[in-house]
Image (cartoon, rainbow, N blue to C red; front, side, top):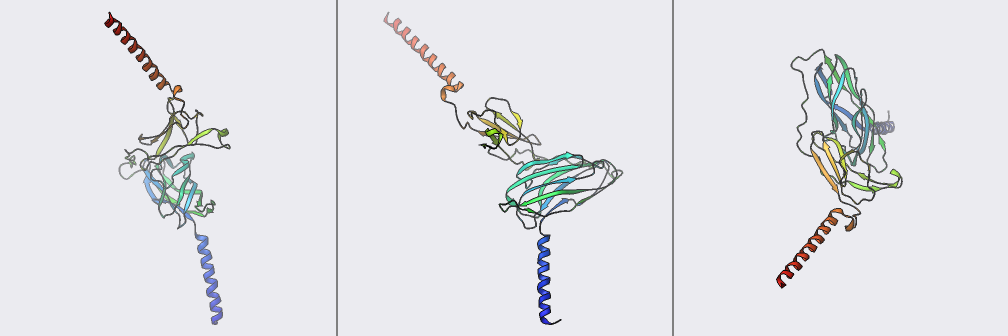
Length: 296
């Protein structure tokens, strides 16, 4: 092979190598641990991680599947997740299927990004696995370009019984409230028939967010999800949003009235003014009565 042929061969080889490397790029979903041996009745944590392979990603969704005759989901935790806004928090969508969907504004790039953690209990002897199915990820490129996602399964071997005491996963020790957040009132002609709605979200780095509650004015708190259509479209009342984590810790954010009522429509101020007027009348009457006694 002469030098010219060698040069052509070298260039073609480099081109093919770079092309294959480009095709191999993409995110990877994997589990920690990758292998789990346990006995019937034992519990274990399965942590779902994302490796972006040097790409910056801002949206993710997918399903973690397992054999429901072998494993039971005891708890799903999203504390410390790389996902800031859950479109759908990780949840048991159907037997053997945990679905999740979320967004990370600004994007995330890294090798060990925790998505969520699931606690399982072994139900029966057998071999099984956890696998990520229909996983999708999108580049933080302003266009929402979908990138390739590969997945590495977690192998599970369940023996008839534990060698020692039954393994139980301890609950998360969390005494801190969810992080501060600022609810936003918005309106869009294309949404909710043009009515005002409230958007809110926060994170809890410990046990994860359990639910939200909303209170408009003097009404009682009620469980709600974002976005929430406001009952009071006049926007003349204070709005409180309560974020509750899975350990019961609470953070409350307050939105002041955006269109305060005139002072004469405020019941408290009106009561105070009536009280002051009555007090002034009684004081004036008392002064006049005292003056008449003095004249006599």
